[in-house]
Each structure stands twice: as structure tokens, then as C-alpha cells.
Length: 352
Image (cartoon, rainbow, N blue to C red; front, side, top):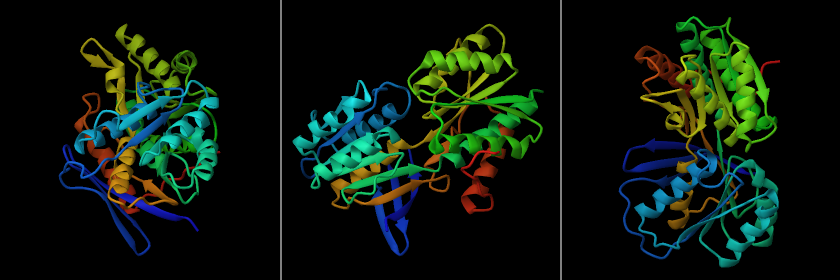
């Protein structure tokens, strides 16, 4: 039976720690000040087609690796990445790094699931981290996120903002439709309805994570149908939605975007404002950092699944944003506390 570890992360500015516990086991991931690396250590990243500047999953993962490299004085060349131009590149890129035998190889996203499984079998002595899906292999650690919980919080933000501004329609834009992304939809719906039961929610899936033009076209459709705020879980496709919100807002037709995976506030900037209301942040950077630190410490949790939740501060809304009032932020925090305590249970299944 695979072990399930719930991550409890302390997100400080200069020193970031995480603790993992599962059953009677307790394991410290990272914490305290970061000393210089005592020995040579190498960590590599294979990206999907988005690359390290996709303003989403790949970029966040790479930022975590770069932060780890700086904290532990890794030399240039001890942290590398290969960008995949297509899904057909996943196995060749993973194999390229695997042949070089680094200490850890990281791949972000569910699209790597089969490729990672195959590579893990072919290179049983290598260590791998896959982010946002599960590969049950003894030499793979899987980092997952309670996206439905974080999405609930930005749903609360959307519902409260729409209600305060006299609007009654919001939207959701998904990349591809399957359970992982439907969990974002589910949490968002529940968060909106918790604070604004009469609000209408428009739902669309683009069928693509790397098509900003599709994202912008869907945003145009939803905004034209009355949506005031759109939350996306669509990777690069969602950047097109943010672009549409920014273009409309810059012309006086105020519309809002909610970002995903990382703080996308800067992506919505026009003049001295931003069209990004808030973002649902998955701390994929923290997952990469923590597992690299565990591996460096000789505590690689192979075969285990690490779950980053609201309680763990592994998923959350951006806590500082001038577009949300202090009252709304306080109410979001109250809901976050209730989710963390178990007083509110968020389903990962969309409403029928």
C-alpha cells in the first residue's frame, strides 16, 4: 500500500520549512537556515511544452529548484532543465538526464505520468519527483495538491467581489476536462455558492493547456454572457483569458481574472492597476524544494505521496492583493481556517 503523507509547510520569507507525517511516521522535509551543501548535489527538471517561462506550473517548479540551488550553493551545471517541444520528447528527455545520474530528476504535471512510470522502471536506481499526479514506483515520490480546497477560497473571493459590485455571473475556464482539473471547478463552485448562492457560474473547457488564443476566445464568450470574474485552471491557455480581462478593463469595461498555480497579478497589469483579482497558488515550487532537500539529506521518500493542502499552506489564495478589500480577505481567511480545522469539507467533484 502506498504511503500518504500530508505536508505541513511553514512558508517564511527567507527560511521555508515543511514537515511530513503519515500514520506514526514523522519526517522533517526542510527548515531552519540553509547551510552550504556539504557535498556535490545535482537536480534536473524536464518541462512539458510550456517551458520555464510559462507563468504557470513549469516556471513555478523551476523557481523552486533555483531557490534550492541558491540556498545550498549548487554550482552552475548542478541544476539543469530540458524543455519538451512535444509529448514525444518526455521519455527521451527523461532518459537523457537519467543516463547522467543526477541526484534527483523532477517532472511537473500529470502529462508525465506514463513516461515517468516507464522511465522509473528502466532506471530503478535513479530518484524521481513527479508533481501533481501519482506514480506508484519505489524510486518516485509523488507531490499532489488539494486543489479543490484552494479553489474554494478563490471561489469565496469571486462570490464576495461579484456580490459587492452588484454582479451575478462568474466563470470557470478549464484546460482539459478530467478529474484533476474538475477538482478546481468543484472547489470554485462550492466557494462561490457558500457566499453567493444566487450567483450563476459559467463553465467551459478549452481542451488544451497551451493555447492562449483559445483561452481568450472563451473569455470573450463568457464576458459577453455577463461573467464579471473568470477563474482559470488552464495553464498557458488561461493566459489568454487574463489578456482579455486586461484589455477590457483598460478600456473601462472592468472584468476580473483569477490566476492559478502561482501569483499571476503582474500578468494582469495595465497602467497602475491589474485585472487579476487573486490567484489560487499551488506551491509547486515548495514541493520541488522540499523533496530536493529530503534527497540531499538522505531521506528521499520514494514510493510515497505528499499531499499539500490548505492546512499545510500548500494551496492558498494570494494573501496580499490591492483588488480585494480587507473585509473580503478576512472572510477568506475565516473559510481557510475552517477548511484547515476540518469544519468545512470541500468535495473534489463538480456539482451535477
